[in-house]
Image (cartoon, rainbow, N blue to C red):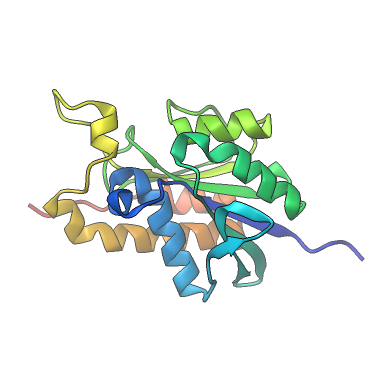
Length: 200
């Protein structure tokens, strides 16, 4: 009997209260939303101490949800360890992360590719030795003139963005479910050209 497919869903972010509501933690926010919606408990495992891990089902798909606790730019080794522990191939890994090249409120799904300057994604590619994992990118916008990229991604969303952030996170969760249950192509068609616009 063939083994059932299992998917590893990774939300990228930085651990600690100081980073909890920052733009760089958009991946953590989505993963927390998915875990809550599907009653998956995230906790530290003795065998995988570098992460918060939870196992559950999303619709009919068996999943492992994961938040690396090693800071963004060192996420790769813990993801590689978890993928190996659960025998999940790279093609069945979905990474959710922030992206400054997308306007706030936009999502983009990709099946593979480079790191786009994102240090967390670079760490994953380096550790896994390949880039054939799926990505759900959440737009956090580019920094204003005079603000560094680091300061921008480590800042909190502004008041207008905060007003629709829950809506963005909910749509990102819907994208995760669509990727798992209907495939990346259908998810791309549904979500890649959509955007939540902040009312003026």
